Amino acid sequence: MFYRPEDGHGLPHNPFNAIVTPRPIGWISTRGADGSENLAPYSFFNAVAYVPPQVMFASTSAKPDRGDTKDTVANIRDTGVFCVNVVEYAMRDAMNRSSGAWPREVDEFTDAGIDRLPCETIACSRVAGAPASLECRVTQIVKLEGGANIAVFGEVVGIHLRDDCMVDGMFDVASAGLLARMGYRDYAVIRETFSLRRPDE
Image 1 (cartoon, rainbow, N blue to C red):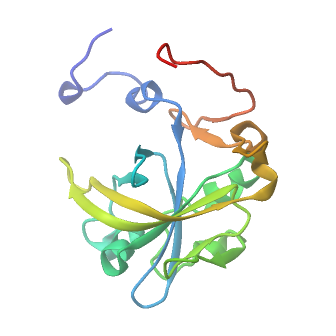
Image 2 (tube, rainbow, N blue to C red):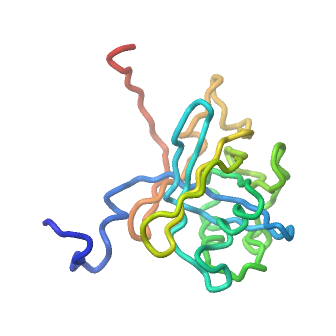
Image 3 (spheres, rainbow, N blue to C red):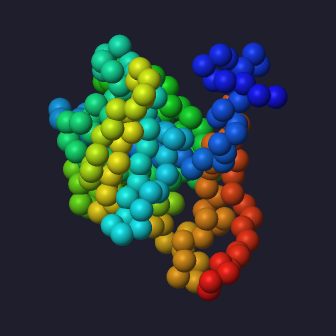
């Protein structure tokens, strides 16, 4: 099968999301200029640089009460900071609950029953039980092609690692049981890993 996205695929569901998988989930927490807090998952998320450590995520839809974007990006525009919380299997239902397009006054931490703690280096909350959280300061906000497509880049200025996810001095992805986004309504959980040495090592 071959198709040009501009012409449509003719399938029951768009296969694009299922092709580029698995994708890590950035559970982004933000605080608005008015002090209101927001928590929402983004699967267009990844790390993009080591030194200094940097991450990005993209928001691809808008809400009527936020103009060209959603609460997360609107809050980041106001404050210049955000926190990325990684998602474990045990938090799948709370994460899914926080994905709703709720009105801006809804605090997803409270709505989904998620405990929060303050960040150390930025004025924002983080998910208390997350296996890891990355405190970030915005470096760039980039408008992408398309109506509501916006990419946010940030420098990681603080990192929280849950103690029980550390094994022999390393952050152990499998023991953390991290979630990944697949296509359609599907997710995966990382339970098994293996190692390969690069040929130049």
